[in-house]
Image 1: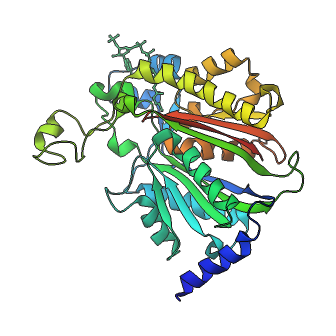
Image 2 (image 1 turned 180 degrees about the vertical axis):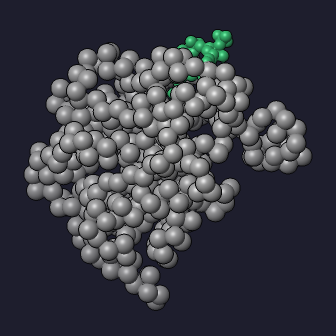
Image 3 (image 1 turned 60 degrees about the vertical axis):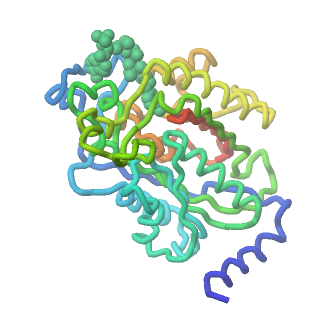
Length: 358
Ligand SMILES: CC(C)(COP(=O)(O)OP(=O)(O)OC[C@H]1O[C@@H](n2cnc3c(N)ncnc32)[C@H](O)[C@@H]1OP(=O)(O)O)[C@@H](O)C(=O)NCCC(=O)NCCS
């Protein structure tokens, strides 16, 4: 039996006996990494026909981070992961699985999780890409939670990482999309934890994930892709038609985002018999401040309980939720023992939520 199989068997024996016991998933650590290069709305005015006023009024975004060098998504993921491992005070060899959510992979294949794993030098453990766009982190959290509760794994590294800036149409043609997105990464170590008191001990209460592929082309990147025809996945014609850039029906995305994030929160509350008023902090996907404000108004959430980063970092898709958690911790808005609701929506359409006793 190989060393890896032996260690898997040991893990199973260690944890299988606790299946159906009080083993729950706990967020052991959180970290993020943002490129240092700040791109303001005024910088964008210089390269496309847009204005600071338009972007601020329609989205609430003032600035975003865009890489300047040859970094790849797995480089950003690596920087966030190393910090998360340090913050967790564990040996990186104790990580049993890597889940990486991104829509801006290093290459078409293999998955970016494999590139990250190579950089972390963690050969042998499973490394999986999650391709659920802005909902990727909550999908990954949901899967990791079930792997831990089943007793299969003890420590799981979950990463959301994106480099959008290299893949945006930065001419006026692409201004409706390109002003919205930023680069960044966030990482979390999820660990198995025996919970004695569910009202106070750190654990994930529940996760909920959904998709509706009817709307797949409301926000998508056509090429390269196997559906692009017999001439090839990406041709000169595709390039002339700018099919290598994201396309979005902004109004449809906006409407569905508000509706689905409200539904997701409702699902979280009903599942756990919790009222919105019982929740200490809300972290919504950060696509547009107006989306968050619309949800907050409808649900009458006090602004002091809603944490936003979109003003400074724009939409970092799969990285947004862990980046938000990290900054909320740094600003003392997220503390141990708090009840936290995460809710997200993205291309697919995909959406989901999680309720966490942090
Ligand atoms: C994209 C979005 C900000 C546009 O806001 P909006 O209120 O729907 O836009 P409006 O209809 O008021 O304005 C559209 C006009 O602004 C123009 N415009 C688009 N982007 C612009 C920009 N960056 N600068 C200036 N003008 C812009 C359009 O060309 C259009 O002009 P026209 O009316 O002359 O055709 C908004 O729809 C949105 O945020 N949608 C959700 C996007 C999202 O969250 N995506 C990620 C989800 S995970």
